Image (cartoon, rainbow, N blue to C red; front, side):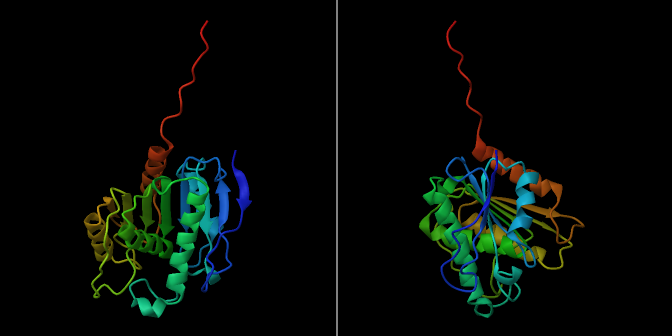
Length: 236
């Protein structure tokens, strides 16, 4: 049975401070795995919960983050990073606070899936890439219509390893907000960081989520859910 949405555990500082995530699905103390869900510009925490339902992942603990004024940072994701501060640092801290909350409840990092759409997809990718320095494995990263944050002309210096973390990069080739070249560049970056990258470019699809992406997320959830324990009948 799914728990009623709860709140608590947002970032301590910056523009997004005091905005608690919505916590739904299976209670954190009972769940075998968790999805951290990050909405796009103009979206909401509650608006991300149907993605988990569509991916048949409501047996997970669902932690959906909420941005101030429905936006994680003011400029485009490919603007110079300084133009998106202090919102960007506060947004990354919000993701970090959610990860800490899930781990503190007893769910390890390798059973946490970061899921984002649009601006939220860019944010979870950025968080994962910068987390590689700690040589960490997540249960997965699912980025629907997103790429890494920052001016593409400025070299990145991500270090460490994601140790085989499954990373789904899914975007339409008709997306007017996310250039396909930057999605492919993000895929190369995650390959270099030791992730297991699943790059999916959809012909004729714009800035949207399609069923194949939800099916891929369902596969990530199924891998973490694992087989159900076999019932043992008492001897006759």
